[in-house]
Amino acid sequence: MKNLMRAFLSVLFVCLILIVVINRLNTVAGFSGGNTLTVFNWGDYIDEELIDLFEEETGITIVYETFDSNEAMMTKIQQGGTTYDVAVPSEYMVEKMVEEDLLIELDHSKLPNMQYMDERFMDLPFDQGNTYSVPYFWGTVGIIFNPTLLPEGEVISGWNDLWDPALENQILLIDGAREIIGMGLNSLGYSLNDTDPQHLQQALAKLKELTPNVKAIVGDENKMLMANNEAAIAVGWSGDAADIMWENEAIDYVVPEEGSNLWFDNFVIPKTARNVDAAHVFINFLMDPEVAAQNTEYVSYSTPNKEALKYMPEDMVHDERFYPEPELTERLEVYENLGQRNLAHYNELFLQFKMH
Amino acid sequence: MENKLSRNLFMIPYALWIILFVVSPILLVVYFSFFDIEGNFSFINYKNFFTPVYMQMTFSSFWYAFLITVLSLLVAYPTAYLVTRTKHKHLWLLLIIVPSWINLLLKAYAFIGIFGTYGAANSFLEFIGIGSRQLLFTDFSFVFVAVYIFIPFMILPIFNALDNLNPSFVYAAKDLGASKWVTFRRIILPLTMDGIKAGCQVVFIPALSLFMLTRLIAGNQVITLGTAIEQHFLVTQDWGMGSTIAVFLIFIMFIIIGLTGFRKRGA
Image (tube, rainbow over all chains, first blue to last red; front, side, top):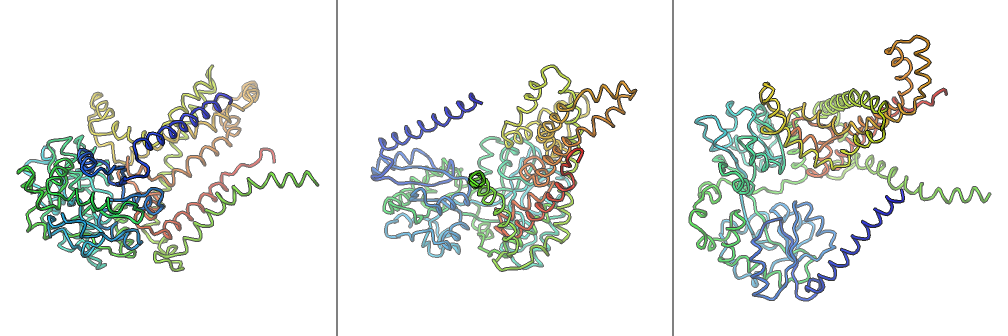
């Protein structure tokens, strides 16, 4: 008992010392107070060299923190413990944060580089006129597949190919109601923002037919499972596809021809911001075409910056898996905020699909 | 008088603890269960709960929790019995408990590797000539991993019960001519029944609401009430429905504790 107490106390003591040391270091490095900018971004979602470049050019010190889910990010901003100056939520979360009154309006006169952005990705329903946000990266929901594990002669080009009986027990689905119900709706030719109960029932019935082909409904583990050749096909985000391709060269990705979801991660300035000017400078800096090009090469998601494409390697820009032809992007839809009740209905149906 | 006063004073922290962390959360859960998704007072959640979807989910939760409990008991009882016969029984007990110090999530991820198509389990099946097969994302692997995780919790109370068993009862039975089986059935088993009941409670109740394993190991091929609660709270943010399911789980747990409750021996 005495030993246990001693062990406990020593752990506590070491932690305390570390906290003090870190605090000291931060003050010495000028992280508290002064001209600093606190950026809150997804993990591994920026080329770190650009942070150094920005600090050199502007003299602003960046404190960089990461999150791994929109919900976690919003909770932290709501609590207001840290004064985040820039955050990067996805489109539906931008809408929610505006509703909750957590964002500051952007000053467009301080963001001259906005002119380089692709018009297709501006002024979208979730934030009309880009009052609160500018897109950082975009991507799609699609089919990640491993051609070496597919039956001979099997070609995957759209959602309906997944219903092929030859693919028995080969498909990993992402554990998200909007994504999977949306896939059912798209495969029937309906919009993935459809709320007609009859259409949704049809989608559910169609999804239930897919059951024999479904190996599992998983979350982020799908990256590991695909990289290890555990399954031939996974339904997931284009960004995940790029990650898996790094690990397993055989992997390919396709944006389904029937249409799919188009998603955005966006810069916003939360109400917690203390250095609003520096936040604008930072957002503007990352929209500079050359900077955006370098960043995109590192992150390997799709950039909404039209000028940046000119500075990027040819094969990357012409990769239709990540920069689909305009005629296909027209068939892609952004999630609309369907309201609590419809969202609950989507989830109810998804639960029924999982039960099946 | 003073004695009573100081006793009441000492009661305060415990009473506060129980009110704040036991009573009020349960009341809050019950309270939330009476609101629909738009925050209006209604009984709709209870109506929804008695639909085939949730009834089936309740049934499958019970079935799997039952399987997990029975299998853990079948493994744990002989183990606990053998451990009490060994020379360094507390060392052996410690070795059995040690794996429960490792984080549940890590163990689940380890099993993804072991049960994978190219994992250790399949290499072994290949080696002994059965050939590899799909192990991950089946109900077999779900029950297996759950049993693995719960075994230490089942062994502990049974070990204690067996350890406290006065050996003279066993000797007496032998002297009077009872066979080994009769000794076990008539002497050892009844005297360790409290340990078995405690173990079953400790395993059955958490097994009812397992949710992480259902995704990681069973790939959502097994759906329990825990999965539904998680989805309602985190994704739909339909706290009412999530709470309603939780109310039912609490209710069921009271029944189970009532059924398997400790009766004072000799009372």
